[in-house]
Image (cartoon, rainbow, N blue to C red):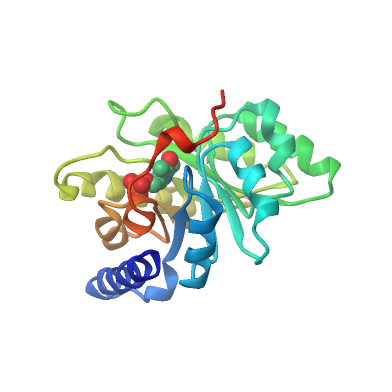
Amino acid sequence: MIVQNIKDIKSRIEKAAMKVGRDPRTVELIAVSKTYPIEAICEAIEGGCTAFGENKVQELIGKIPAIQSVVDWHLIGHLQTNKVKYIVDQVALIHSVDSLKLAEEIQKQAMKKNLLVSILIEVNVAKEVSKNGVAVEEVEGLVREIGKLPNVKMRGFMTVAPYVADPEQNREIFRNLYNLSVDIQKQNIDNISTEILSMGMSTDYEIAIEEGATMVRVGTALFGKRDYTKAPKEE
Ligand SMILES: *Cc1c(COP(=O)(O)O)cnc(C)c1O
């Protein structure tokens, strides 16, 4: 079932990209494997997935050694500064940087290990629903500070849109993040890139792609319904 889901999702990604004249290869599918067991991840790998997203550090570092294949791990959930040290050398991308303090801790841990760590800034575009992410007005200031950190490479932005009955309702949120990204790109800030836009989940990834997403984070549409009783407790 997972393999078939991946086929369906990939074909929908392709259609959404083509609809707006984008090359479908510019959209990466991140399989959000939080709460799902190792066997489900292995099945997704067989189905062609190469990038997995987890939202909790403990669950992420538990799963990494259990997977034999080479895949990219993405941290997509809120990250506490005291946990940065466990993941800086384990993940391809941290999607959820939302403060200078967190970015500075990533810098510190990355420098110790002589790494360049790729991050996205999480933006709280839909203010009323989420408490995570940086307010739109604060983004430019934060970006300028992060640009000064030599072991941190900002590659773009991420947002979490609300769960809505009609995914069209999230179009404006995605469009706003795209426009913000274009505005920041125009400033030509040193050590800052805006090539990645991580937006869109199971119910609205096609809309996000139409509005410029280069990464979509899909969990339930790929793996099926989540059972939170099976996820490790944390925080
Ligand atoms: C759980 C989660 C997703 C995936 O959500 P689905 O609705 O299952 O696709 C995407 N992004 C973040 C940050 C998440 O925590």
